[in-house]
Amino acid sequence: MSAPLTQPEAYCSDLARRGDEDRWLAASYAPSPLRTALYALCAFRLELRRIPAAVSEPALGEIRLQWWRDALEEIRAGKPPRAHPVVEALASSNIDATQALQGLDGAIDAAARPLYGEPFESATAVLDWLKALDGAFDAFAASHAGGDNALTEAAGRAGAAFALAREGKALAPKLIDELIDTVLAQHREAAPVLEAGSSGVSPAFLHCALTPLYLRLGAGRFPIRKRLRLFSAMAFARF
Image 1 (cartoon, rainbow, N blue to C red):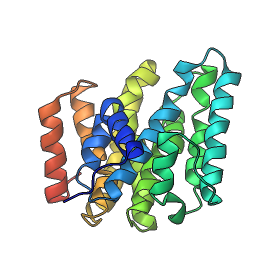
Image 2 (cartoon, helix red, strand yellow; image 1 turned 30 degrees about the vertical axis):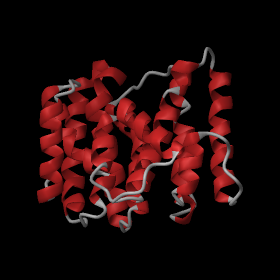
Image 3 (cartoon, rainbow, N blue to C red; image 1 turned 90 degrees about the vertical axis):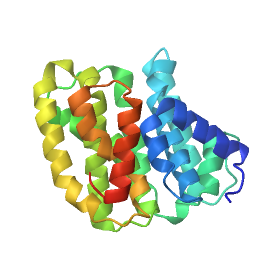
């Protein structure tokens, strides 16, 4: 029987469920404590992604992003975590023991782009940005779950393709045809590596199995299909 969630862990689980149901459902297949670490990483990503909409000017957003950089640096240095449920959950998940967190530092840098409203000029530009942001979180999650370098790299590429399938039309509507081709190429390249990973690591990137559904059905919720697809991917290692 799993231990009850702490307040920070419950906060992260609830934020992930409301803000990114795909990753929340995927993480539910992980054993504890990996599951709570994945919820914390998902919540951290959501905190970064919602900053641009919460501020009135870029400088204010940069200040908030710097707050998160400092919070990560303090975790890395072994200092007591800041009094924020996501920071506390990250610290208690021992994410600093996985690697030096450079990928998440880069994700914070990438999260600044929407503050300035710069349009994307190509599908490659969108993909590169999503690799640096969403892909970095998925690569980190795969590493934290025990994946090797090849699996971690594939998780990052698959995570960017997943984000592109789910959000590409909103990010760059004029590039939709090019985006579809880019998603397909990235997903097909990464899928065999993901399928070869162990079931214990799979929950870290299981949401990437939904990429083909998003390409076919768009950004709708399709809750039943989503759950069936995740179950099938977990049971049969088919991405």
